[in-house]
Length: 382
Ligand SMILES: *[C@@H]1O[C@H](CO)[C@@H](O)[C@H](O)[C@H]1NC(C)=O
Ligand SMILES: *[C@@H]1O[C@H](CO)[C@@H](O)[C@H](O)[C@H]1NC(C)=O
Ligand SMILES: *[C@@H]1O[C@H](CO)[C@@H](O)[C@H](O)[C@H]1NC(C)=O
Ligand SMILES: *[C@@H]1O[C@H](CO)[C@@H](O)[C@H](O)[C@H]1NC(C)=O
Ligand SMILES: *[C@@H]1O[C@H](CO)[C@@H](O)[C@H](O)[C@H]1NC(C)=O
Ligand SMILES: *[C@@H]1O[C@H](CO)[C@@H](O)[C@H](O)[C@H]1NC(C)=O
Image (cartoon, rainbow, N blue to C red; front, side, top):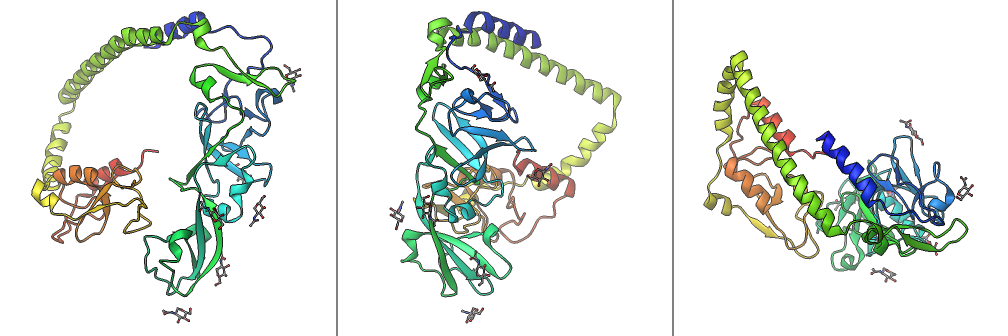
């Protein structure tokens, strides 16, 4: 496989590398962490020439190799998680994990003039004494732990709903701010200028036309110098797929050999598997279709109001609930899951994956080794 790789790199290097234009400032793509590639209009301030980037698009690396974008207007710094160069968008997270706090302090304005948020809603912040504040319509109100203290809890709600669903009288409105929906604590910013999206999408290099000019050009578009895109796909399909099949065949063969070897040389494996199988059969008591269908289903509305505002992510497939999706809850434990995710689980296993209660109330005693292995398979693989 390694030799394949070398072959490909050499091939692409000689035949597909387009001619470099002499005047344009085309700098090498670089990175802080090998995850977020940094190229025009961005540059790494510490290691790249000023003309490698566009004014206002300077990035830096922090002491734990995160990519940092600072906004000159406010001095706010955020962590860059992903840059989509053809979409001209950048996905950022808050190093202090408290975007609501930042938005309360006018963060929305501070990203301008280079960036902007693409969809904003007005949110109102409430400071509630936590001793007795129970939210009447708690799916509208979200608690913000990073702004709360021992004596009080800060909640936010979309301003348009506050009049119809006011908070308890112990809550005081402290601020209103416009900000985008937060998904996994990540926010998308877009930029309009420099307009490099089309160039990047066509495979070209966007860059300053010269180090003395603010004008941007598109260079090295592959159709001028390299093989057409269809030919590249042809090569990838013609050589890559047979290669992959060979590799799969080889690894099957090796796995088979290793299994035979283990069985011969380690009779204990036989014993262990006999030990485990009865326990697995205790757990593998799945439910039948009609039983699963009888558990309550909820259709999420457009506003994604959730029965429990803190649980906005399906614990099984780890993706966030979207409008119009169907959720199912398991009676007795009140945990919510995507219908497709939990139904598959319940066919294999009759208990709630979170609290391990079965709906008839009898919590199954799960062998610790197995319950730990199944909880690992449910935890995010980040
Ligand atoms: C940046 O590049 C320009 C043109 O290539 C060059 O004249 C200049 O010296 C470079 N500056 C630095 C700091 O390397
Ligand atoms: C990184 O720098 C911050 C201050 O900017 C400091 O608090 C932190 O301890 C440093 N972390 C490491 C691993 O050096
Ligand atoms: C937010 O920033 C804008 C422009 O920078 C300014 O006009 C506005 O007064 C600021 N608002 C707050 C609450 O600081
Ligand atoms: C948020 O509120 C401000 C002031 O009330 C208003 O000008 C703005 O249009 C509102 N934004 C949205 C997205 O509703
Ligand atoms: C909320 O109110 C309490 C007092 O009731 C105060 O100590 C706290 O600073 C307030 N928090 C915010 C974020 O306004
Ligand atoms: C909530 O607590 C405050 C004092 O912390 C008290 O004045 C108020 O009556 C309480 N409200 C209810 C509904 O218990």
